[in-house]
Image: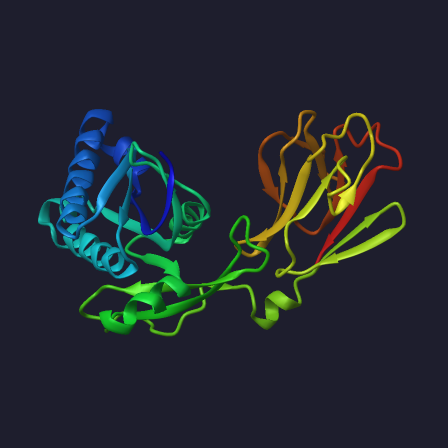
Length: 299
């Protein structure tokens, strides 16, 4: 039976696992990663959490509260960095977390917006980092006494506006850490000036880093409607991510992109950053597209 409940969702994965496989081979790399995940599992249980699943070099777990999740995440980082065996192999982890309402299944698995947000935090984290939402951090640290630094704002799928994110400071010695950092500067002046201008059939559309994802396709609910038989109902979207405007294809017939006078690129169920200026065609090559061409200009 599915039920809704508030939980802290934590994702932790081994940073640089590809290097391990390249340098040590499959058997030894798998052994090391398994040892790291086993050590993280012990920390999870010690802090009252539950391991939901392990996927490759990643562990997903839940905790009853945001405070429990932050405490466990800090202990995970200290465990890995303080273990001489892991240090010998230059092992590090990165952690993302979020606290919110989830749909909990009878088998223990969890779903929902909070899980997606936690996964997004994990994708933003770097080695030795714990990245979480400001709401999660401030909801826990009134009694936890943890330190943090702001990473600015980041866009999360399903959220209309970017959200404030936090780097939790888990190190006891912070002498080598810059406490003021804006690693993701969606709101800084340079980003505000970074516009994307789109031109389509006489329309001129300007996107900013704070704009919601710009959806394109045949369905009337899209921001740009292209009513052609070769265009999918929800065909593609343009979104500002990690300092770039990125076009992502979700279609049946692919999306075609040309930068300047270069050869056109065909992207299908994939995404690429837009650069400088060029043209986009949904569902058919630019060579055969006529009026249904979207022209873009970055900056």
